[in-house]
Image (cartoon, rainbow, N blue to C red; front, side, top):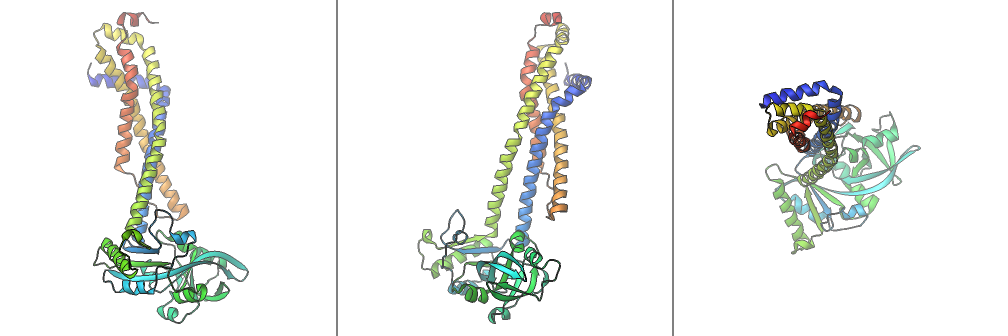
Length: 409
């Protein structure tokens, strides 16, 4: 029996039992659509992270005090470390591979306007911070080096903070209180880049005011730098490490009292996390493929029983065991392949709907990603499922004795 004849026979049998065929394919459809959707969302999330990091600048370098650790930075745990100072900043500014150096200090306080107050995280930095972090304004203006040198009490608010305190009113020119000191609002930040959430809920003040007047310290809690376009970011990171070790008189790298990370390092970590999460969730979703495969095996066994006389008749007319085996295997593969294709289309549809919903309702620039690997995996798994779970029913059909089969009622 030719393969073409087996395909025609299988399609004819599927048309005769449309409802059973649809129910048989349902498990495969759900499994493939789930895996496809998760893989597509994982690819979209990874691309979103890449785009956002690039929008901030892939040449951004973060320098934090404290020994390198796989956990949270010491500052995030409330541990005060004073290893970054003005001597370090001046040394870094003399390094040609670094275009801009922006030291900063951070704190947490209540910001108050009239009878409305909100707890915020603020950071104090020089005017170069806006260039380093590529911060954009929604309204108003940046503060300047003159404001920093003159200890002017000016403040730039994140979008959500401004909305909470002022509602629909324009905050620019108004005064707010931070740690019982009055600050004039000169600008409101626009949400952009991977730091949008942090920016929305933060405020920026001049470095001198925050460091000397609010905190009363002479060290920095973080330094942000931008690598020069003429140099590789990894080279700039190595130069920063070398300079800080020289300034801190460190000869053993294991004794470092600072951490240096680039945006590319963060990108690699985030990419690894999204990839691992995608694989994990895809594995969970693939369980439905196993369930669907078991369903197909059960239906195929029922089909073998119902077509026992047909099998006996075909064997009596000269069909071999291989012919019977091929026919039922082909029918199983066709079932799973059609189910896989339908699941693929449904997965693509839900991926597009998810991208539209995130863009439209959440206001996030979430792109539609439908990787080729998802297509190949979906169709490949569908065929493999058909072969795997179709072998046993096909062997049962092929082994039937033609005389017993003809006598079957």
